[in-house]
Amino acid sequence: MACHMSLSSRLNKAVRQQYMSLPQGGKCQVTYIWVDGTGEGLRNKTKTLDTEPASIEDVPEWNFDGSSTYQAEGSNSDMYLIPVRMFRDPFTLDPNKLVLCEVLKYNRLPAETNHRTSCNKVMEKVKEHCIWFGMEQEYTLLGVDGHPFCWPPNGYPGPQGPYYCGVGADNAYGRDIVECHYKACLYAGVKICGTNAEVMPSQWEFQVGPCEGIEMGDHLWVARFLLHRVCEDFGVVATLDPKPIKGNWNGAGCHTNVSTKVMREEGGLQYIEEAIEKLSKKHAEHIAMYDAHGGKDNIRRLTGQYETSNINDFSAGVANRGASIRIPRQVGHDKRGYFEDRRPAANCDPYTVTGAIARTCLLHSEEEDEDKSK
Image (tube, rainbow, N blue to C red):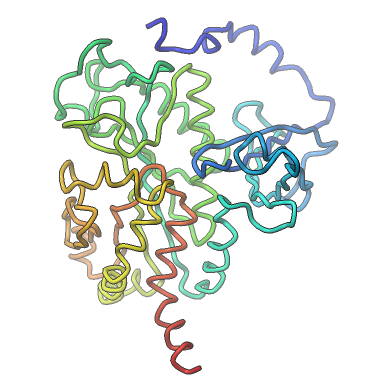
């Protein structure tokens, strides 16, 4: 296991605890979190405030060196951090905070990988629809050597079958990490609503939601930050690669559940079917936005096998895990509820995904009507 775990995870945590329990002299540590230029990686740094911020308005803007995060040239590298949502810090505890930030360039325009600004514009336009999302984040635990956590050093574990929602040391690899992440999310105020072991060994999932509008992306990015930070303490790595292991192993997605006010009410199935019809016409556009690298990663996952649809085909069905869009069986029975878009990859940007779904399902017809009237 020597190369499997990071050396820093084996530092004496009892020594750390002695320092962590020292009083802070009335000051507050605020950790600023942002998405870097890869569109997938997260960065963070911390500053001291004189008092605990009561709201996000009390957290000052900050800046960072974008040339070190794939976001700017060295000759013009300062980028702005704009605080957008605040959480409690489960690592250094109250009164300390985690603050998610948008990144703006030197000219105050959104950085290339800041998809929150455009998503927020869409969500403001569709506010009256009360659109709710729930996202199911799958991920895979690896050692720092890149080998799946707890897999045999020179081979494979037994085939898929006993691992999904499994129990026992031979089936569940890394449950400590999952449970610590869950508690960290609850403490922070992230709207985590569940977790389970996935089909491939050392693959897990957590679910965030229901969240309304822009809140979905904010909560999922912070849940991901907490996951990476908890894994760091344990000396392992969480990857969001959509197909981390080639062959007969399930990939990792980020299934996105969607409902509007009318879908949740009596007879809502009609509106669900209308939304699916609209999505069917924009399939290629959505696929291009549903992973961090413009469809290049998802093509390895959406093969039509291992509980996925084929990337080139759009399909929908009740309780069908091989469809692009699944209507849960209970929703088919109740004739109202939500639908599940099974196409987004594990490494998707939640702002891009939720923005695209809201735009296609709720805005396109209005925009087209406007165009025709011009």
